[in-house]
Length: 348
Ligand code: PEP
Ligand code: MN
Image 1 (cartoon, rainbow, N blue to C red):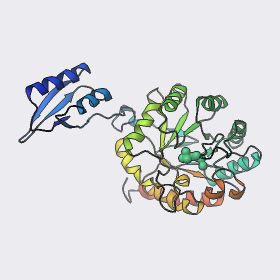
Image 2: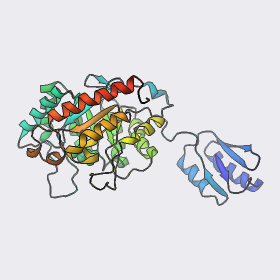
Image 3: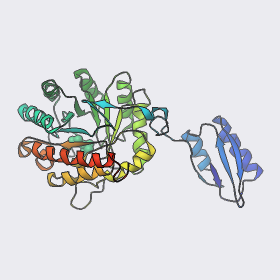
């Protein structure tokens, strides 16, 4: 929809606008109002270049788009009935729990294996663990490819699928070759469109699920959903959105908690939402409240960092991981909130 600065476009302006949109297979339909005439773009109006050229015209106030920029992930898309299932749960039908340490310690694999067994016991459906880590400080532990074996060993021992972050094509290939069932795109890479494309291409003919974290610097919801569209565009729509707090941090929390965006996301996309309270608040003692709030806001699941002995963990675990006992308590309470929502108390 083209909204002119004046009450209507002149014949010359209409001719110019028509010439632009016709290059993209569209036409213009004036809608005459009492004080102003606006102009509908008839046809596929998603082409960014067409919109940019129209927005560049001095006599155009703004362009309102009616079609969604994310045609696959849009809640009005044919994929809206698509369901993602993992670890025995179907997202949307039961609260899904992803849990495990931030980082696998290759020198002490038993911490990861014991934690995997303990989080399963606590009720997790997917085990998480970082093989490679995006670290702010280049001199801290960056992860180790050898940990992929520990990750898959945990999957074999527990019978549960595993989730790990990949940051480049090499890691992506190692993870897929090893049989990782859920790939994580981290907050730092959620706007790395070439990585998103590589992942989309690599999982196109697989059942792999992608957990897409919200970037630290993502503002609009469309930006988040469009990142998911990058992956789905290659043919595998198994993308889960994961709010995990954004920048700048809220004084006292590691990030700006964003579990409240779930209902807004659900107005726009059918994609399931699994909230990560751990990175959002960044401290074990705040995780429970954030997790429960997330479920109250309508999250389909939670991704929680947990460790059998947080103080012996590496990466985020000493400050952020909850113990399996606390995880079990969070899951029990979260399920109650989930059931209340299901029964209609507090909306959908
Ligand atoms: C993580 O899951 O351990 C992690 C690094 O996440 P994020 O990308 O959200 O910081
Ligand atoms: Mn972490």
